[in-house]
Image (cartoon, rainbow over all chains, first blue to last red; front, side, top):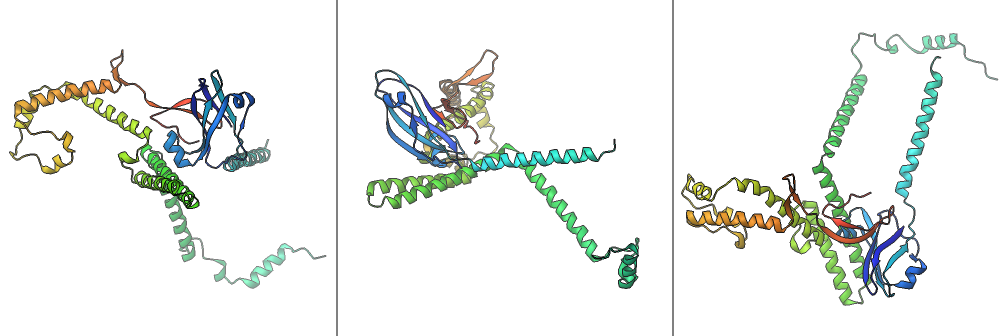
Length: 118
Length: 250
């Protein structure tokens, strides 16, 4: 997922949130692109539980990563960070079930159609 | 190679192994106890199914959905409290950090209890957004009273008090329900009218100060509120505000 901020003024600080599903986990270190790395200093990164995320943001059903950054460049800049998340097995399971169900439905329809007298 | 079974063999076997009584009752005979039990069981299953459908239909109401969401949030708070307690144990060498983690864990546990009960979150457990939401609710409920108050006149309140059928003072239970700062002071009928008028005027200006206004169509509207947060999600890297109505979970 991509985490972005509004333009942060020179010397300004910002707190940026990235929300993701509760059954996913970050699987690697966050990656910041070169312009962001040149302009910003990451002061703190916290991975929050679902309860902490709800208290801090008012959003329920998510976990979050909270990034506190400071723009140390001379110009306003946008903070961008990429966070790699593990697969969402619950969603994959649901989608797979839908595919299987659709296949069964099509096969059933074919069988019914084939069995009808012309 | 085995010889195939011919139809005549089946008939012969049936004649040899089944007596007339073992072939089952005639059509008009009462069903056996086993059949009755199966029929009753199927009926029970159908009744349970109907009850489940009824329950699901009731679960679609907003109140039930809200209760389920509260239970889910309470579970999330308890889980968070557990995480913080484990962190406190791991940080046993650093006293200050451990105390902070334990206090946070206790705070989340208390929030979970209130969430499960479904009451108003006490002040010391409220989040900043919940503080705003509470003021928002107060503003809306106060605004709901204004049309009613506009129909009343100052003399109505003393006349109402004078119409009490019982001369006794208001029950102490009623007064005890209010904190001392907002307890209505018992006064003379003329003073009561003034208090009433002042209260209505103050309520009107308070609603206006809290962002209530009347639009061009004459409808009462409210200025939206929320806390500013730069939030990105999995599906969209968007920056937005968290308003008084939190978005539902995915």
